[in-house]
Image (cartoon, rainbow, N blue to C red; front, side, top):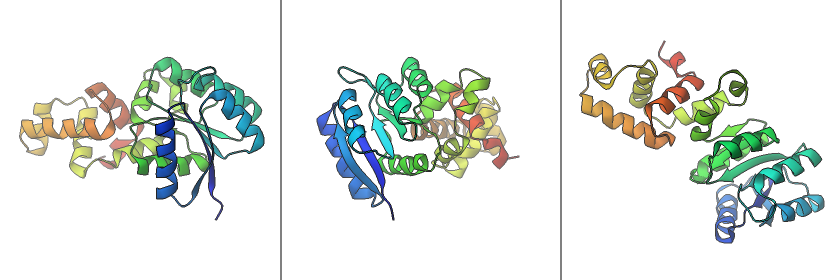
Length: 223
């Protein structure tokens, strides 16, 4: 079995060394072929050995991650580049995707989810953190072509059946009291479930929950 060849690019040495160890320990189909600490170093390393995927931080000294995406995608369009960063700033997201990034994940992603995202990306599926998908949905039309419905659906799978049901009702613009009456549980229990939903999906408000429910086609499960 051919391993997925990965180039890691991040100026935080401890983080990137830890990430290398985690990926190679938990996934026998992933191989870290190189590590770079700057965008310029990444460009030089790619000339020597072509990876399948590049995991790339946004903020780095010199040539930042967004500019690095622009340079690398132009020269090596076959390489899939995924931003892996702590920054979900709208400008970074839109510029990185516009320059050819095929994914944008936040660093708080669990290791198993990151590995699954790497595998999915290797097969051509765009990967987005839920927070990023919500941001991209703030505009209609063209943004919907960027968001991957299958990935959104996998995020929804983190929820229990009851939480999925409540999220579906939230997406119908039902208030907590209405949800309580609808499914015969206490209103405080509804609130507790909603808090759990926010935590599992990495979102912080009702509007984000509604957007994520819609892009995942959650209504198909309950209609």
